[in-house]
Image 1: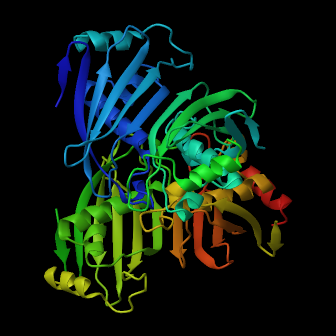
Image 2 (image 1 turned 60 degrees about the horizontal axis):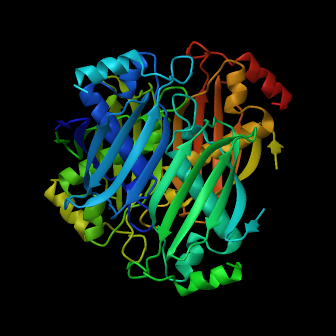
Image 3 (image 1 turned 45 degrees about the vertical axis):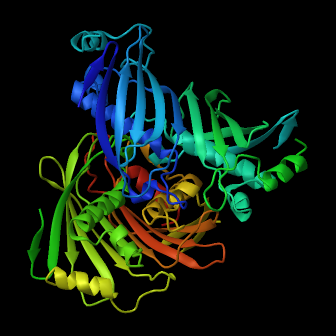
Length: 142
Length: 142
Length: 142
Length: 142
């Protein structure tokens, strides 16, 4: 379910809360949302050809340099949650994604953002946008 | 190693990077730093009597409502890292902690912050600071 | 895709290998297969009405008392693996499941077994098969 | 605290149960014991010079090909558990470790075993014991 508005592109995916992702309070441990963000980002990446493996095929990795996460409501064991992952276009040599996670009642449980930079095959920081990323942006109409 | 300056209290603890905490790039997966923050916060809590179990004994839990994490350098398998956990005093019915993680070469690898609110035994949000937390702050000279 | 032969019932489900489930060798860390077994067991449980939440609704939990895991081949990031989960009927007050995990090339990568006992709401071990489990076995033709 | 009797060598280490390692039942999720076994095995390895990094320095890795785990009692959040890790000598090109985990009341909570094979730098299975492993065994008096 992709959708595009001006300078961002969204994709929706689902995760099912695992037993081990919940804590003694019966709710998902807060750190696991970082995993859900990655699940959403990789589902986006597989859909649009910008996943970790796609980047690797071009000789790049894109480590996370910043992440934020705000929690509104808990998720519980067995919940099937919806993740809305949005690529935020920018001029920088970075990838910025925003996330919204909804519970089965369609209530917003969590929002977040991650920022990634590009490292080339030697592990050096890319100060400009890699060619493969430029081509991808053009293909996506950005 | 506690230290206190005006309105904050710091504590230093250590973690050893586990094999499973590293990823195919050979570095700690970014989501695991949220766990390291919790390791630092709980080490602080055990030292100063404000751990999860201390709070629970007073009928409270304190879920994380916001976390941020900024990465400067990677950690690798086998690294023994130092976590500096600082309680930031505030007037709100919240607990704010800041984190600095250093590698064995004493370089800053990661900074972060978490914000927690208080829920009573019924799971209701505490709009004022719980009594046990007030007493704890007084005892700590805050 | 359920299938039943004499005294066992099988179910097939899928998992997609997450980035964080792989280690610096680029393969799934062995401990994560225990999670995959649980994924398979819970998919089986949702299909046939014997999941963790179904058991809990009847006042029971069923902790694992034994697990074994044998590894033949590795799984890698991005692999979509197939889990065949088989309930092995027995006269004991236990649940025994066997697992076979196949890679995308349909090669067997891992086999395993788990044994669970039943605890009632007070946490006491059930020495006989709980009524809900008896009814479930009957319904399943066992 | 090493100890050696005839053909096996033991080492004792400690782990502190993390909040995230416990589940909605308030006890350590069974899959995490595989991690505790690795914690014990790596503590053994650091003590006696046969850790993952030591093996890697000789051009070898040693993936787990089999693991078993039997649970007697649960561990809970905050427990500091003791792991007794024992190397079982054998003529095979394998490393066999047995584990016993004890709770703070010194009760046995879990036993287990892992079997590892050796892969050389090309990822090929070593059918005979690698030289570095032979030297290590001799040094250890095995």
